[in-house]
Image (cartoon, rainbow, N blue to C red; front, side, top):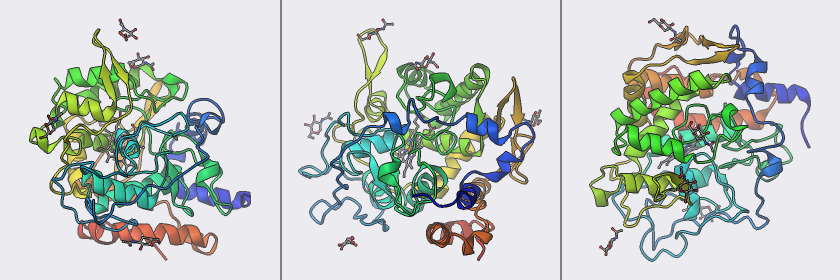
Length: 417
Ligand code: HEM
Ligand SMILES: *[C@@H]1O[C@H](CO)[C@@H](O)[C@H](O)[C@H]1NC(C)=O
Ligand SMILES: *[C@@H]1O[C@H](CO)[C@@H](O)[C@H](O)[C@H]1NC(C)=O
Ligand SMILES: *[C@@H]1O[C@H](CO)[C@@H](O)[C@H](O)[C@H]1NC(C)=O
Ligand SMILES: *[C@@H]1O[C@H](CO)[C@@H](O)[C@H](O)[C@H]1NC(C)=O
Ligand SMILES: *[C@@H]1O[C@H](CO)[C@@H](O)[C@H](O)[C@H]1NC(C)=O
């Protein structure tokens, strides 16, 4: 059952960055054209179905990892082996053709070890627990990403479920859910976007914006010289941006494109192993991406694996840490924020954060406030009387997430009551 169109419309307000729809040249229709259709890659019609969904098994007293359980804050102390030797519940099992995987190598790997539900239908709690227990991601960043993946992007704010890949609305939505379809993390121009490291642009691959592309992985390894460091990945991301802008007539690099820099930072911040003194290596990175090199040098895909003897990072990687990396990586090669429209690049305006396609953010705090504004700003307080569960769910998470970090940074907290 779905609510009335009026409600759907309001829900759209809360999720679709209304300012984009007001840009001259970039109409809603442009954005809609750039999203998944009802069939084809990523759609419900082609999405794997596992009739035997099982929730992820939580960490235990015997194998505590960071003791992150039920969506709460874990200890935030890493430097341990993952999976824990002997832990029967979190060993590698390759996904079957009934299991969903998507554009995020970090989450695909977590699902392959049962830190997320192995069928790829996961929840807010599983996400925040998994990234803390496996990667020692900070609780604030864990909540922020889980929140975005569910409300802004691709999941269901009532059930707090999301598919880590294709559209599995029948399994993520509840009868009370207000969004029409829930595309999962594959959903284009929501969280997933153009100019990814190893995934094709949506338009260039008939909507397959989530499968691993070995040519791109090879380019990333070559451009970074196998170091996968800030400088190398910044250069690679810049080349990918230029490539997309030239090759993809439907290229759209909106404000959430900034997250792509964060994802790139995860490669050298979250994936390296204590066994390698936390220096990224080709072998280690390839394992997480599920990249396997053939004798002729090309890269093909195998299930993502946590490398043998992998020891996670010692201090938690926080929201402020990641915006610091986004700021440094984007700042090294600033690029226009906007999209190709009828053969020309149109820059967005979102004052004071984006002017004429130029990002005005300078400090990490600027970036943090901008990202916070993006996900929380579009929630009009007028929704309160209309869709109470929506606003309450949003408030719950935003206040929890925003509570300390963002007010400490001096961000205007946009929630109104
Ligand atoms: C709740 C946590 C997370 C969420 C919701 C999430 C979501 C996503 C999404 C939607 C993408 C696709 C972006 C795009 O390319 O268009 C992505 C990409 C990526 N994520 Fe995650 N992610 C999470 C945690 C992690 C972690 C813990 C790691 C690393 C250990 C990671 C590493 C990456 C990398 C490297 C990419 C880029 C892949 C590529 O472009 O080839 N992510 N993530
Ligand atoms: C987690 O939630 C479950 C179910 O609500 C509950 O039984 C369990 O005690 C909780 N565990 C912790 C550590 O909060
Ligand atoms: C992989 O990426 C390369 C470089 O962008 C592109 O030419 C190729 O068509 C892509 N391959 C697939 C299978 O999508
Ligand atoms: C390289 O080897 C793989 C696996 O054997 C094969 O599928 C692919 O076509 C080869 N590519 C080239 C360019 O020779
Ligand atoms: C992992 O550690 C064990 C024990 O220290 C060692 O025997 C093994 O060679 C290591 N494996 C890898 C791939 O480093
Ligand atoms: C950004 O600012 C520069 C001038 O500094 C201008 O040339 C450019 O067109 C602006 N917009 C974009 C999208 O780069």
